Length: 196
Image (cartoon, rainbow, N blue to C red):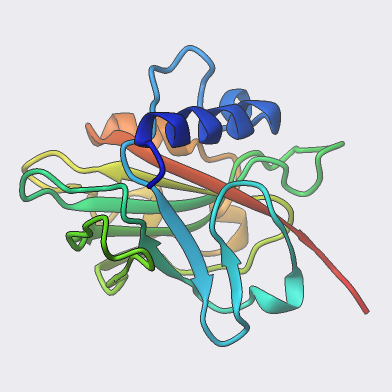
């Protein structure tokens, strides 16, 4: 079985090498993954099992599912917020819309997963969709925040409820988490490409 500390180190190294740490997660932040999760598109069989793969954009237009991996054993009765953001909108060379908010779902309950369940378990993402799904362009960064005991507490007039493309620009995922007293506990990302 994989050692959680080794896996956390590996994931942090990939996040740093690909500048997710610095562009999305501040380098000064004390972030260490506590939750390992994969992103799955069941209809197209696309899967982000660990950070950094490149997927054909045609495989990722629909809202994915999130699967908690077996190294995680939740403690306490917490709820979570899942965010997908793009630090390079519209491109790495000219990220003038950094960050672009693609998806925000609050109030998620994570299933308990033990080491014998090597496939992991899906998270019901039918929580409170604050920002509806918007398909990715390269890259897509997923962040998982643990909510405070009182829940996310995002007011209905918050910018996160505004879904027009112009309203999604120049947003900061980690600042959003801090504003609502959430703790960043997981992160992964993937790139997309367009093929003919």
